[in-house]
Length: 268
Image (cartoon, rainbow, N blue to C red):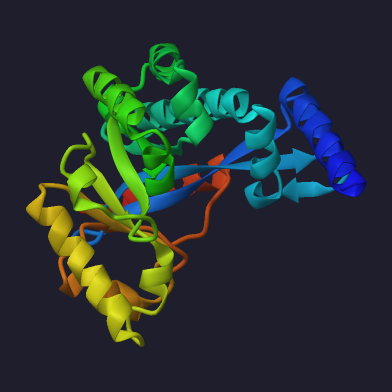
């Protein structure tokens, strides 16, 4: 227990220093339209560029950030940076509808200042609200469903989009799904991974796609790693995808190069 507490304190102090010294960076994983192959947006994913340990992935520090409350300030920074960066890409590329998806934690949703955080990031960057998508998991939404619904309705009035991340891994209740003001369902990678070898995963993936479309929602599959998986999703009408079959998460510089290449390749 003492070791755990000391590790927690060291990690918390490190995160405080990282905020002060701007050690965090954002990587972006491209999201594409399955039918046309057009790049529609990117998911913003935080990394910690530690001065001694190198790049630290979020699964190493997000838990401590949430327990200590620092996730609110870290989330605010990611929101500002992602909006600023994507607005810059829109201006450079002429792709005015390029969107960015940002993950929201339970604490950000409960604290009550998420609406102000989003408003400030949009105002500072000039990003159109419709180009910002907030990703919330089912478990986050259901921790305090009534408050979640109120906050989401207020955010919806700002004009931002919302998606349910990792859909199918939580409660997946149709009773709440029909009430939530969401625009997109994201099929969890655990179903996509075995979609060709496991009949149950194939059936669940097809069902989520059908359910999303019946409710008027777009459906995006994450964790797509092979052309065969992509072909399955295309055959069953999935709208968008992200995954290693196209690209791993990229630094801002690498994403900009890729975006420029894709635009250059477009038929005139």
